[in-house]
Image: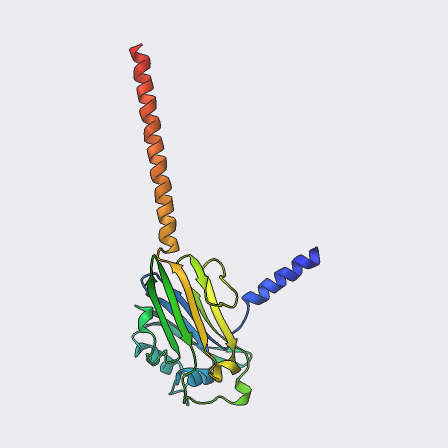
Length: 232
């Protein structure tokens, strides 16, 4: 039993520590605004997004300019290293997820968040645009992913690789070789229109309202009972 528990804990920790060579991570609100983090090796920035201006620089200015030209508000840009390889990271805010597709920063992404009856439907596709630089054969290892932290309950999803994680996270991934070959990732999820925060606030407000009504009714009953006792 002890070995089984340890094995499960190890598997969970390894799943949470997957390192991607190219990753988009979105935090989306129900109004369509949000934040996106992108991390990738420089050659994958060039191969998937057509990023230029990397020669003779560390790439940070080029990544910042790309996102600012796309109407995003850049929070920070950093250059890190993992196992001797450089990775460019950017975090930026966007006003509307529906306006990201086709911008200089997202030529590889089609994405929309639209009303669907009483819910919201996320639809998208991530695929490499044609005609971009080809990385060398020794630069095609590892995994690529697109992940979403959604703001409300997830009712269904389109083949997210790990299902719904921690209640509101869905993600899609493939290996770098497949991504560079043009294999698309089809993205999709159906979510509630109410954010988890607002639903929680509404639940607490309802509970407080019920408690106040019960308290008022109890006080009213006690006062009436006291008056009846005095009248006798």
